[in-house]
Length: 611
Image (cartoon, rainbow, N blue to C red):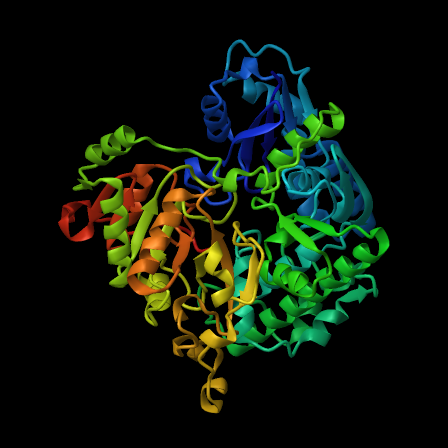
């Protein structure tokens, strides 16, 4: 029996995973344990969890693999400094002490940290290093339902690569083409994230959510920054950017091109300008991803596409690739960002380096991405009692019926069931749920529960068998990584007066029979739910359909703005007591907010940093 521990760390979204004979047993992000969003630190808690779940000690593990190569990354840093010298000295001087102290000698650092888990772990000879983009590509191909696929990876930057094309067949995976730093689609998108006043490596999804409120009137100006070829390959004009050498993403020349300085999130409101900027960069990103997809389909003639890297979390671009039918089938790694690199590094070692055969699963090998912590009923009740919670324990059928009834009465519900999700999306394990038919629910959940911007859209979880009745899509989307339009029959068209409203004012217009999950452009980020991936969640939506005729519920992550998704029953109770959630359904327990001790209330509105 071969056991591989995969680790990603020291940039953002640190994580760990464990494979046993190539099977994914457990995976989790460090942020869920430390409660620090996108935690980049050594994933001590995540490693402890995956080992414990697999019933292993570290000394039982055969190989440990890190998701990237630190020496190559250091080479890129040095070469970048030389290329831009003396301009980049400030950022170089800031980065050097940490590199010399820790990152350059990462094997020693990892070994010293790993020894703390297990005194019997004696040698560093079983520590290996993967390539950053190979880790991403492996995370997308090996768990996919395809025997053969072309894999497109796009993110900020790994060691040198920012965009890669790889071919996967059976247990083989080979990177064929690369675009190198500083030319990066991920960093281009992050530059606009920074420019619109959101946090880089955190707020990119806000930029995507803001885009439909604007028009891409700055598309040509965005293209002024890029030398874009017909096949989708590109180079960025570095005279507009500061990320290669400075401590900011953009510079004065960039500001002059668009006519203003970056938005200060502390004292500047989002205006129509920011919405139009968001629409423009989103449109250009989609165009580049579509062009790349078309050129690699034509060049390699392979019908299946896998996507990974941070850009693969741009579900709007993914939806456009799907809609254009460039490939017959698309599969996207749910932990597409750096957290998933821990999994990809382990899978690459198992299949590519060790040559182990791959058995293709017609669904996929991610177990619905439910790979994290879980708590049995006794553990749940023990934790709830310890914090002084007032709860009722119900039989399964009654629990499902009551929860569906609460949802149909427009109650906001915290839902904590089964294993925690791996990746950035809550998929019915650690979710906040609501009634999509309510025209007040989007605003109420955003402002009173999530404490976040009112423009942020919510996702619909829909029974797979009812998908085509409601949405213009007919493929599985279990990981909420594809955007599709609402069916024409369910739309409520806006009149001319409503169409001319200022971006955010469109938010309050009822646009469909499910307004709470219909974005201003009539789109939705769809999650399909089947009985075999999440039986309890499926039963709840089915019961809601029985009561209302609607096979859809709102699904958003169980957290507030700036907080990682809840991990333990205590995390869930704290979030429940710090927000305007009406009920918490956790295991077989239901908690009614009105029956809780008012002294246990918490102030979550200002607890976490803006993202």
